Image 1: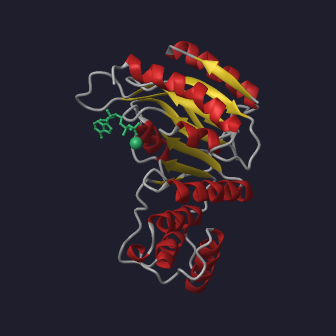
Image 2: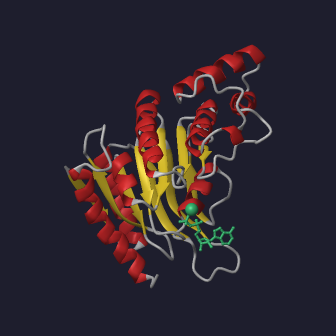
Length: 276
Ligand SMILES: Nc1ncnc2c1ncn2[C@@H]1O[C@H](COP(=O)(O)OP(=O)(O)O)[C@@H](O)[C@H]1O
Ligand SMILES: [Mg+2]
């Protein structure tokens, strides 16, 4: 069902392993949706770098979950891919252009309606006609199953509905890469479960490459075609698993649970290594 792609304790072996993983995954050079090569990140005053020697490709249309303990540098890495910050070392390529980023908090503009939030993204993308933007916003709202919510303001929507609008807004940006930073972490389990289903449905229908950050092992295995475990201090690719369990998966499936147990053990090791 599943296979460990690599184990790497040092940056050098991580690089060799990523080369092997690239070959195994069939991502030839230049065709990746996202490519990180030797990426490191230090903040001023920080003794050890937050990220170090990260080599990682996300293939077009691939769904990759980035898993790690809290504070290990997941958000830092995602922000780098989103272009919100620059790496201290190495390079990041997103050949299709800028990637859309979605956070735990929907970050919708509270003074705009759901529809207007989406229309703003369309305008920034260069969709010029007002009527065109309106129609596209309606289509995207329907896609995230929020038909009829165009005029609602964020405070009138539940947390789950706000994340749907945020997803529609991310789709409105028209990119080929979607970056998600623990987007469902603040939601209750049932709402999260439904949104997992919706996200997989959207991913399958849009062909987007998704880089999904989580500290929740089950969520990573529920969603990803590949789970990449980051170590802490510095954040490096510690290990990867390919998840061959067919979708639709459920979080309570035995296969999902079994692989989660295995991955949790490795995550625990990473955490105990740093005395957390
Ligand atoms: N702008 C910043 N300046 C200094 N330190 C930062 C900054 N952003 C993040 N860090 C540090 O980098 C580490 C990783 O943070 P983060 O990427 O948010 O972790 P995660 O998302 O995995 O929980 C933390 O120790 C955090 O304090
Ligand atoms: Mg984070």
